[in-house]
Image (cartoon, rainbow over all chains, first blue to last red; front, side, top):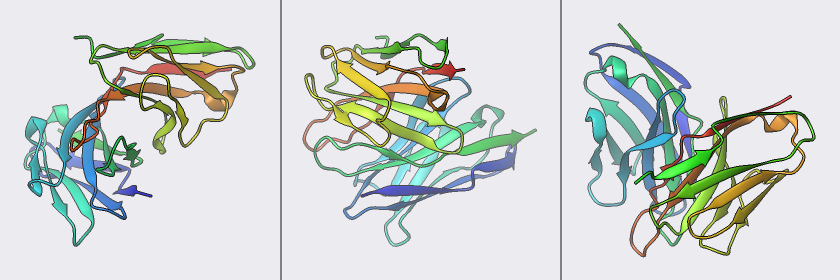
Length: 114
Length: 115
């Protein structure tokens, strides 16, 4: 079975500062990994995905994530936070076979301090 | 394309009442999913349908039933609502082909309160 752990249910950063949201995964096979964002009162929107190609993945809104097999991590970063980045972020994992389900982490709420 | 649509957006029920949450997608996806989202618990899978005519239990199926009406529509039914089912419900869909990832597309959610 796969799982993801998101360290820190709440993260606050100042506008213009680095954003770092942590995700560690557990999987018996090389996984596919995803980051989703949820703005208030909305559904989830895909930010970026890792599907065994490049280990550094670039997504929308200036976010990127790096797959590190040795650390079983897939942390999400953005060099400079913007007020519009305030949202909840979810990491998810799946196996790359067939029609597999996603397993989500518990989420990290990002607050941007003006 | 509307993507994934859900109705209703909000609902208040009394304990013991029944209701059906509707979901439709216009992306011709094979797979559809129902999740519930509760504070501090992320998204938990209730039921899913890998293809038209099939449904399977997810992590938290108790108290729910589903129907894959056709390729587009996947409904979630609460036969006898309980306060523990107060949650935000999300429907999602995805397309799987060999060698491709399972990116899921989400609807806007239904906020359900059971009194």
